[in-house]
Image 1 (cartoon, rainbow over the protein chains, first blue to last red):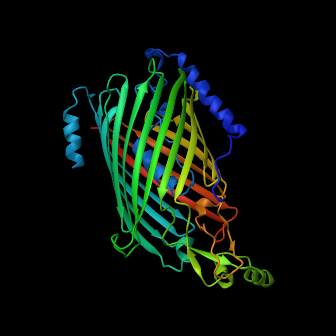
Image 2 (cartoon, each protein chain N blue to C red; image 1 turned 180 degrees about the horizontal axis):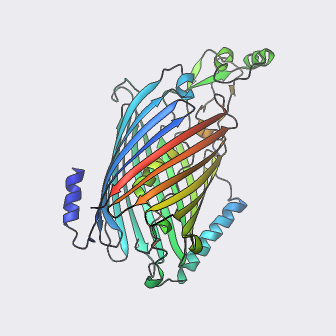
Image 3 (cartoon, chains in turn brown, yellow; image 1 turned 30 degrees about the horizontal axis):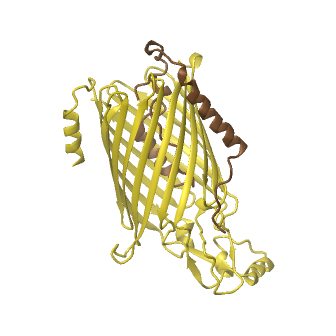
Length: 80
Length: 379
């Protein structure tokens, strides 16, 4: 059998999943609009310059065997 | 057509901010020690709809590729050059706390056609601190052979990709994002130009007695006469789980970004990607981004650097010489300087990549340089 099913998540992956869930639970913590000056800075955007990033991902995709994990949305000043 | 659609959508928006348009041009040059040169140019136009994150955008991309890589040379082919053209169109518009989006992409090159459609939605949960995103993308590819009409030879590949992401402002200076992507591919995933050399025990014994290491220069001397076209499974299920953390360093006027991605698929490839970035404000005009990226992956279950058979007419069911199915490690470092003036932003980025192939027949390492620059105008 040449094709294998994915194994159970390794220890680092379990920690990663735990961290994602922890971040979801942290959703009850809120920042007020007047507290988001820092979050609105360009360097705090999770998706800065999408056109530039698209070009970068284009050549990375030709060199790396892995795919995915790029999307998201939100963050920054909280205006999607 | 894309431009007219942009104008119609833009005209329909009554809530746009004062300067909603952005026109940008980006270019990159990629060159590596495997004799591959790629020059890419991209032109993009975007029009925002107010502050809710909605926008309409169109991009056109042209790649010019010139290659004489080991894939090409090992198949006894000469250097080739070709042009790939791509058009993208995307639209999103805020509806209450939802941000639905649609996108379409079409690309064409002499031996490959691809088109994709996607739909997604982002939803603010509670306040603006938590955003949930869900996206689906369908890509339909038609793979051909250079010099042969698609009506004579073509293979199909369908790619379904679903993505779930959660972005959370953890504090006034920290953002965390988690993304899970499921990608399912069905169809032809080999390359029509790749041929896999086969060896038998006597050939390997001869190489050993000659003191020859099998590589790009020597493999032809010791392989069996027949070369089989590459063949890989026609179904692949791929999982990626990624985390992005951003933290603002108040005293330094800089942010620290950490990205980690774990990847696994049913071909037994596992990969880890780690990227670090230090993004600093130098002055009112200039910003500097220093970044490094590490990538490591294991081999596919059917990958072998040397396929050894017992009989001359025996052919392994699955066989490949795709380096992206071999085990390898890659590290890259780079820097980007950005200029931010009122209507214009510009940047230049330079990065270098080193790849170590730990079990690949043709090469054992590769060095690549990428230069990328662009300018954006917000009239």
